[in-house]
Image (cartoon, rainbow, N blue to C red; front, top):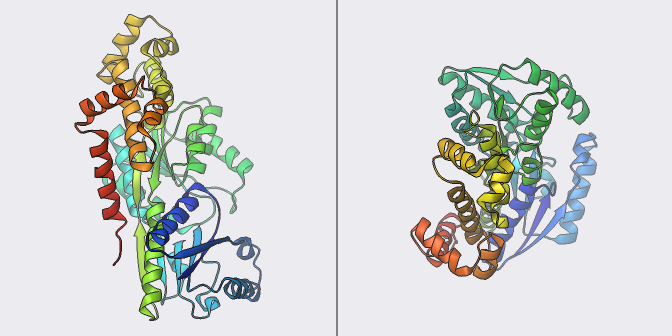
Length: 403
């Protein structure tokens, strides 16, 4: 069985969706070919004849048994009729732009907005804000509506950003965001529709002379590490389950092909994978700024074999005062925090890679494999092998294998 995967872009979230589809395909002995298509043909309002011709050429060349069209969170760039009866599943697509007899998989705006609200509301602000995507997108609108509902239910106020332009223009957006940051009440919890906007808002905040997280707590979506880690203060972000979405698309398509029936209207959603908490929503925002600097330094460098002495140097005070202030704010020692961050990285790698244990200990900042094994068992309560088996079992349960 040959599957054709029409890919919108190579953004990290889209690559994860492709990886999820390949995970299913490889597990079932099938083959899949990915092709990047040019969504600009819809943006430039080219004729449907051009669009139809492009699909015809792809189908004629690859002769697939079925297609997955990854839309990158936009409207469907094709018509179902363009596929001339070839089974098709639309992935990460505006569900309002595909026909009734289609399968469409899209992001769960309610789940994502709820996650943002659970992160921001406990900070106890009176005011919150939503930063939507400048161009009207179904996911941006839906996330904003749900977030606004949670804010209102908790008796808080919400401000919405409104751009003067209809298209995304980074220069104009920056000027508008600087002005918006100056007008917003402070402190304020800001939910940005994606990481691109969260990053842009963070830059505007610093240019305005304000700070994160003291004046603004910020949450983005997509967990794009390039955007979230390369600001003056790292940005908390919601990682969506894009790999699962790709897997689900491939699974649904294969079922459709094997059924040899016309699809009925099917809508499926993928939600939150995890929340990656960073400095932009630190609950310690009112703590000594030296402690905030230390926490961020540890989060970024704990796996580089840093020591408490290195952290004290960043704090710029005596060892005794550093230990005192850190324990008062965090509840444990600097060394405990270093070990905790290292361990979280180890757990992440055990579940997401097949790295050798010796490489794992070195990569995560441990002095030896024995140190890693001992610390892991003490803090997690099981060996690394037992933890790896637990992760594998969870993954099998999620990425179920069809008979």
